[in-house]
Image (cartoon, rainbow, N blue to C red; front, top):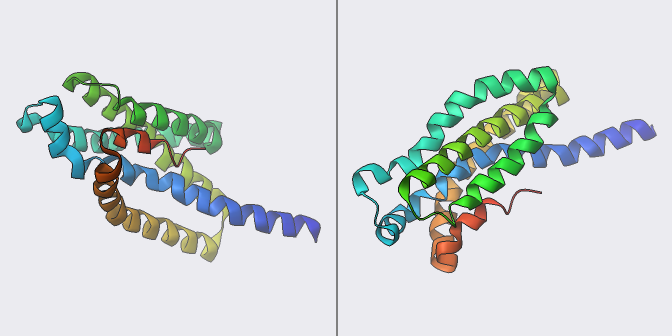
Length: 177
């Protein structure tokens, strides 16, 4: 009975953590998109190519999720999740110190690679933690969380920009342990 109780509560705590970790993939673009015009103006970037700052992470998520998913299957999803969280925080926050286009684009690409690791590892862990109908329900929660955060993060990005301005890139660290 004690083991079942411990497992129940530890799984209850893991689910929200994994849902938050998985939703960071939407935060990478959603927080920056509303403030892109201010970034372009402040750093005097060419508007024709500055949109790549928002979209490059999508490309690297798509490129890195499959190999990082395979790696997570081989070495364990936690061993991919933890370094991905650290790299997400580092590359997300790096934008606060960079004032030229190419290095900022590179850090956004690396942020996408870290996001790919987060997506693969968090979904892999969810898939391992549950079976049958419970797994379907939890994956539905994950899909709902991604949808909701896809709506909320741009609004939060715009609001945070009004409040904290150039410190916006530091917001990439808040969900990380």
